[in-house]
Length: 492
Ligand SMILES: Cc1cc2nc3c(=O)[nH]c(=O)nc-3n(C[C@H](O)[C@H](O)[C@H](O)COP(=O)(O)OP(=O)(O)OC[C@H]3O[C@@H](n4cnc5c(N)ncnc54)[C@H](O)[C@@H]3O)c2cc1C
Image (cartoon, rainbow, N blue to C red; front, side, top):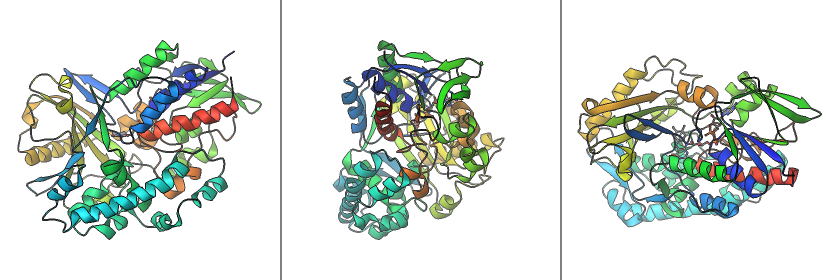
């Protein structure tokens, strides 16, 4: 008889793992605390507008292809390659930099800003490629059974990359570029890890190679939530059962194995194998009550940004705003140093704007736009009080209006604001940390919470706070790694 696997959480990690496991003959059921699947990769439909609520693009698209090949399915969504990748606007500058993938076109953007940009960028990206080729397969796409095994594997990486573990992203970028504008723009990708360029190791400059050269960024036709809808449909066709509005809050163990999980309605959920897609650190503490993951211990770990997100429907077109846009201030270093620990937001914060309706006109009524703002802020350890959210959002919208020279406020017909409090409650994210555990050296690879349980042999983990890490492609790789473990544990 097929072994039964119960997956707790219908985030991208849980869904991808379910696809791989049904293909291998396991019987899969999924429990989800919310009323719809997707987790942070979610969708809001309101006032005639459609908004992607979390991820608005992804890199390493070939990881989705690998998943499809592994499951012998066609991907149930269509990707749109982004080129230009995004635009960057600095406060006080009456122009935006357009980040093209083509290096010659990109160099034209920096003609009077960074001498010999093209030559420098080629050298910088070549080094990023070397880091990528020398590390990704041996460190990211691999399971580790011990810290020793992890450190041993690290030693197999080319020694020339070793100093980049101890240098930061900004220092690496500064070795190649002299202008502040280029340094800031190239360093922005560190914020995608929920960190800053000043506390992200230089090895992550491989991300510049992934964004500009290797594979770039992708959006999904009809919006990112098409990924979730497609995966859920495929799973339902294969008789995977979904149970929504079901939150796991407790458990019962027997002889070193997890016997059953208990939901918020006191219902018992039995299975042979359990895969936890809820945050791997928080679940160990909150549900399994492990001392190493107690609230105090979790608070001492390094967490990524808390997201302040705004979803605006406006009844006008914004022809001068691209699909993905970054709006930066004038005090990058000072801002980066304070951003993740500031208890108040005095000035206009830095923010990102996505116009989903540009590439997907069906996501807004005719003549309107669907806008999504992300503003990285401190998690709830540092800024627990969000009673000032309207004031902060007002500042952002006023600043945006000035930069694009259109009074957005008078055109708003739909507005939704989510603070780190909302994100934390909705998806069980520790202190509202949007991307989960940070990617600093002490929290990656063999040092990250493992994808198998320390105590229960029949419990495994997938998602942002276990290996390999955060972001959609990492969750897909994570689903492959956890499937390898489950196959070894319980061949059907
Ligand atoms: C604002 C924002 C923007 C982002 N932008 C990007 C981007 O552009 N590109 C990119 O690649 N990544 C982006 N990310 C990161 C990306 O969203 C995440 O890394 C990824 O979606 C995490 O997936 P997951 O499966 O690990 O977890 P989740 O999506 O959190 O899924 C876990 C699921 O488990 C459920 N759950 C939790 N606890 C329980 C419980 N006890 N019982 C039952 N169910 C439970 C939750 O409700 C959730 O549905 C962004 C994140 C945020 C917050």
